[in-house]
Amino acid sequence: MASTVVHLDETGRVRASGSSAPIPLDRLAEHLARELHIPERATDLYLYVHGWQTAPSSAIRSATWLLRQARDLAATRPDMYPGLSAGYRPWCVVVCWPSSSLPTPSGYRRIRDRAHAMGAPGSGHAAHVLGHLLGYLDDHRTDPADPAVLANRNGQYLHLLGHSFGGRFLCEAVQWAADPPKRPGVLGWSNPVDPRRPFTVDSALVFQMAAPRNSFDTAFPSLFPSDGRPVAPLRGPLVLTHSRWDRATGFWHLRAEAAPGIGHSGVGTAPVPPFPTRMLTLEEPYTRHTLDHRIVNVDAGWRFRGGRASRLSPAGAHSDFHHPESAHLLLSLAALSR
Image (cartoon, rainbow, N blue to C red; front, top):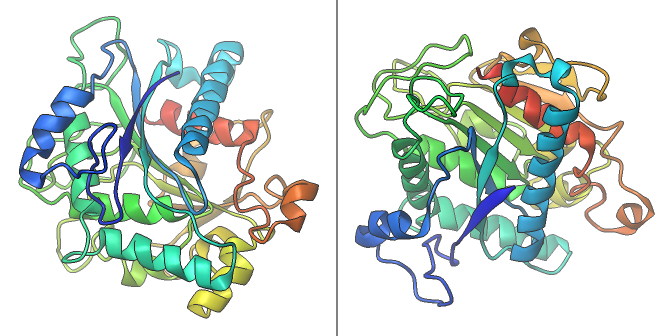
């Protein structure tokens, strides 16, 4: 599985390769054009952002493992993913940011505050930078006239993939992308395209999101339609897993935010009704009825439980998403986007 890596500093700005110096914002497009080379034969482009307590090497391993598992499932069980009959060749941009802290309530609050500051208007640049990155990926999707590429008439498919605080960055980035439109979106989901948005994201999957349950009512007001405002360019569903065995977004989040987080209890109130379902086994296909909703709450508690090490860890099963069933969900979203 091919990938490339983008490093952000504590302000959310892109760092030059092998340097701590940030790229000036007015040179960001030039930097992305120089560093990112999207393979023409890739069918699906992923933007992956990691979460709390994750080193860059671990983030790269996670993204690589998930997409390799998905690619293997597509090859060995094609009957489960008929939308991918012409091929599935993923390519990923892994976004790394400074997320390490002590595994304590104060450490959790420190990274929570950093994640917020990195993405908040006026204090950080992460949402701006990731929005530019999404726009770059959208702009440089392979010409779909190439018969070797299965894609809609906008080019290759574009997906968001995150874990923990990485989900916050992705939601903020999609909100930020509010420039005038470049082209309409044509995707497989039922949600209409807002013509005022520049591009569309085919699906978004966040494992164990570290954010308050009601954040879609408060922190992300532009993700979904409200009062005639243009909505974020999220054409496909926003799918979020949760597990009661996740202590990072349960025990620690409860003490840091006075309420459990999405990764522990799922999305609460939101501008659109969350659709509840459970994580399926490899023998059970996901249907469009299950995933074709604005927000999908996936209860993964039967699978994301953690082994003995996780049960002793302060974070519990917060990072226990490396399972074939996770790849099954990811791959099903790609197949149903067609």
